[in-house]
Length: 237
Image: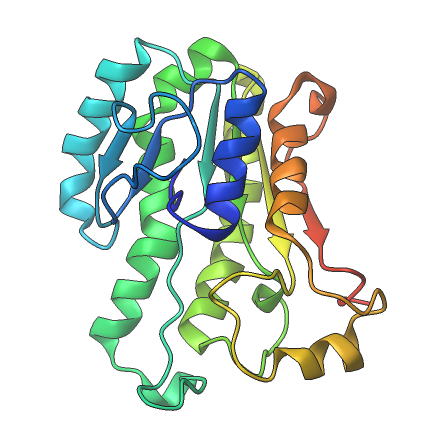
């Protein structure tokens, strides 16, 4: 799993670990010994996914640990830059090419590189891939940057393409699209969105997203492929 050091990623690793899964994590942060799961340090790879050229070395290290099969790959890591100071939204006309590329490297090209790199291991286990998209991939959001939003829209399209490519090999590819989840990535003013736009009138919790990810990787979701499952308290309606 990528992006495992905090928020949804942290909750997801704990959910799978508590269920007896061996979880391999990739994060740009070193392993935090306070993380409450066994063997975490030995199964963690520190990698900045913005550095696409470094991914092949990471793939080799994961293969050494995994031993030829990978039951699930969860592409959770993402970045959403904001203006310095006030933390406001960076709009499409305000971001230069290099910054766009950095966002797309982490949010889109890295998931693609990981899926391509682990193709044989996923086929061997008839495994599952879950890409973390977002509600902002289908609508303009007051806080999420334009680059983040378009990268998530691209990832949703990639999910469909991979589901078609992998289906005959028995590998399922789905996406989870969260709305406003209570993590450190939320911007000031989110409470207004909760009151105005979310029928359930509350933020989602990381553990709720983790439960959905676990379901999609389990045998209970054997006939789900190419789906983007929304978990947003009804915000999309």
